Image (cartoon, rainbow over all chains, first blue to last red; front, side, top):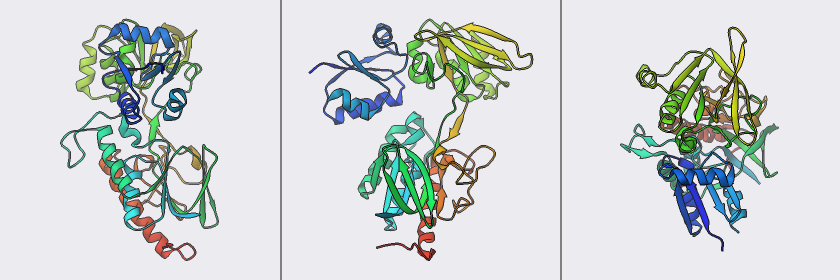
Length: 76
Length: 309
């Protein structure tokens, strides 16, 4: 299975919601905190063209925001 | 099947209403696009009794657990229409399902107001943001605009000052934020204020590159090169699905009396979506409890509906 990455920021309520959702589903993911890591912020903007967190990336696909339905489709 | 009660929205008022309705033995369905509503956006809460300090999502998880313990039926979807048919209410959802109930509590809260200008939808998440604390770190060393003059706008500007190279604060009015935080803002060299101005358009290619401002007095327009627009202009009630079914006040909130009744018999409302003053979690929760108890009384007295056991 392709690796799942969550781009998050420190004080973003929907980022924590997303992470607990993934944990509940038993999905292994790595996290990149754009508040602490400006390179990760730049990487996220370049990869997705988005300036909003959370972004959940799997391979070439990504979902912006906490959207359980779209996450489920992507992670299947 | 006909429910005794359908609760639309599951923030503090809706979930509290659910718990009170379940304890009264009402056959209840909660329909909401999320659990927790606006509280999910709140970080440190220091004025909800019983908790000296608690995070918004943590508090809502406690609410959720209490709802789940009572085995209330929940559907996670948005309501698209609510209509009265005789003594019953028909609720339709985004998933094209239809549910029927004898009474309804609308507790659908509020959502951030949008600017309604060209470019806002197109560039959402591509420079247009409604959460400075979330998205601020993605605007390092670039110029941004903040729209609004209240506390949330000024707080956002202060927050963004940690990241952005310039902050252009745009308010159609003056600054209504607390003087304490306005003073902090005034000390920052990178903040420029445009009071008495409004945004008329957001432009860009793949992401935001410019906003067009208009000075309200002179109608003079000019462009401002920025790469982010943070919209902090207050909140709007979520009740599009009601259309003209109920009366609203001048703030477009659902008008209720002190028993949480709207002008439509059997239709109750609670929390931030209503005309009740003070939009606080504790107030919303209390209103939800009251609405559910009043629905129970209504169903006991209603000649054609009654509570089915």
